[in-house]
Length: 72
Image 1: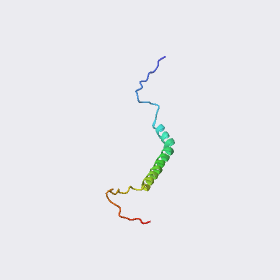
Image 2: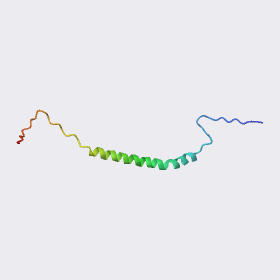
Image 3: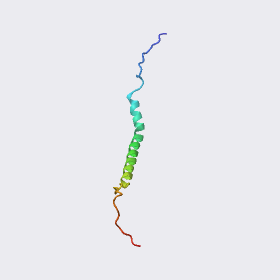
Image 4: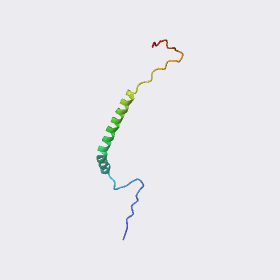
């Protein structure tokens, strides 16, 4: 009996076709879509929180005296 030896090269799989890539994308597409929307919502929330944080007021020098008189 004669046996046939195929020379397989590393990184090349003759059994795989482009249909697997398309099939994988069709399966993963909803998850990718959800991930992008979730990242957008989280980013928008973080921006809103940062905008709500009050800015630090300028510090007045300690040399400046307060001339206000409080009467009791």
